[in-house]
Image (cartoon, rainbow, N blue to C red):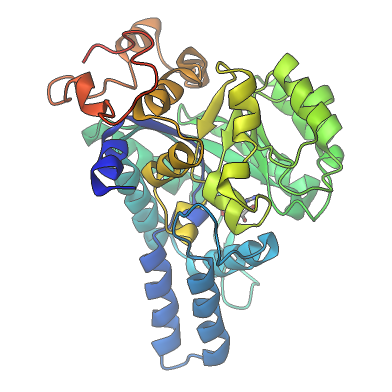
Length: 388
Ligand SMILES: CNc1ncnc2c1ncn2[C@@H]1O[C@H](COP(=O)(O)O)[C@@H](O)[C@H]1O
């Protein structure tokens, strides 16, 4: 794709609803932190660190129609373990979180929903808690507050329940969400290694979320033998679902008839090999059958994959021959913004009225024509959806 087209996607105002904090730490920051460990005088395991740098290099992925340097999901989860070791104090956490927000805003993201699993940070012997889950979260919320004071992008937080860490750990996170009562926490994400445990064991937690009015989004069908699909789609019916790529035709039909908004993560699906070619991505099963199906394009772990939201748009647009106008229309309308505003339950009605996330900078925003793809021979604008 030409640089000009890439620029147009960078300028398109976008929303990001599926971004894991640790996975979104800048790729170069991760490498720098690993090199710091490597060069430390007391570096105990240089070979291990070198192989971790190699793993990172392999996972780093450039968007392309067919992905050649794919790695499996389990390798991704190895990287998260490394990241959790590296992000081991509040200063680093503060810095990387701020960088993530900056990066999304520079990419013209206007509403970012970051998700993270609250965790205790231990000392080297893992005997003493240095930072509690509560302090971990408070630090992140503090970064979001400070950011919002001087930036236009709106940022909210989902607390993650990691299926691999078990029910008790998940329960603590949901109780924390309730207890902190922060306007920044808008819901609960159910994620983690899909090969480990089953979400069916977490039914009590789903019920607690419902009883307490906490919105939920659940990772499903990231692998073919996901035994939780029926349970999630038919019994739990969360507010959104993530990935949802390994679905059979019957399940796709079921969703078309009974839609749940889907967070699509194209590069992630290629890297983890649950989709082998971008032009076979099930995004199109939904899009082609129902142009109004609520779909949103997301990055998942933009740091470890070294990608941006704009590049994800580019990937989908190229693979399915969608014009800039179609992408624009998709980003504007496929995810119901009233719904998002409802997630931000602290907004007063007047705030909500004044907040058009697609028009955050009315003075400096370019005219809509700027987003028009001059080479496009498909339909012209479907409706005058924006007033800049
Ligand atoms: C690649 N696809 C994925 N599938 C499932 N869960 C994923 C994921 N990518 C990330 N996570 C979840 O997010 C955590 C890292 O961010 P936080 O430490 O919470 O900020 C991972 O440990 C995993 O539980």
